[in-house]
Image (cartoon, rainbow, N blue to C red; front, side, top):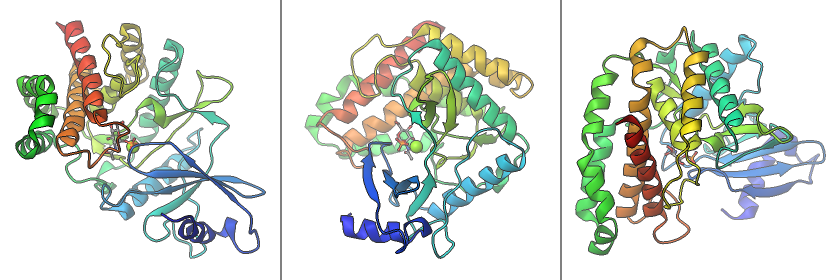
Length: 342
Ligand code: GN1
Ligand code: MG
């Protein structure tokens, strides 16, 4: 987007009205899907985001979910910042149907990889508290932010469809990963079976480490959990799995080199998750935490590989094999988990 058009969007918010003409914009490299900017005027700093309408077909639903959850948490005295959008001059939480503004939370720091078991512990405790405060929130009130997000059979069918349409060079390059994913298809069946026995809850559905804001001075203190775009009804095992996927990986999400799994971080996550959700998790949930971890790594690998086969339409790439490298990283983790459980 041209900076002039972005400026017009910013001016649609009260804080950047004609009476406060000066502001600075800086793009933040944050997330694969949305564009994020830091915008400051003389008094305040905000986060401006353009929600990707190709991925989020129901942005209004996403915003309604966020507002409903924020209000519930505030009502209950949740002791951390919530994501409450700043209204535009027209008193709306979206400008041009895609742009939104939040007060900046901080001073904060984000990480791409866990720094210590203390940090892992703090994150597990933080998200557990989030669920506890949302336990009496009626998940049936939530809109579906992305149709089929948790439909893993559909994701597998999608993978086969794009495999069929892919060019032979990419198929050849990804041949070991394609074979591996096909050979482990049963994970989806195991997951589907467990799903019939676990409750639906409000889940975050993207609790990777970079979605936790840590205190800038203290890397073991979480200030806030952000990126509520995928708040949805679903199995809590998905969130646990995604935290394992992100927090136990000693390498970055796109580093294809092997041997980056931390057993200590895994145990910390599992211990803290179960400890802080003692009265919340059902025995079947507790028993299937490991399956959640495996299946989320599997599905994330499948998503990256599907996109690689589809010529990188969904995840932005910085080099030609970027999505394949991301796939390899997820499969390395999956293999480490499988060795652990065998
Ligand atoms: C995407 O956009 P971002 O970085 O918050 C993706 C998640 C993946 C994640 C992998 C809407 O999240 O599902 O787990 O990348 N979000 C969407 O890093 O597809
Ligand atoms: Mg996200």
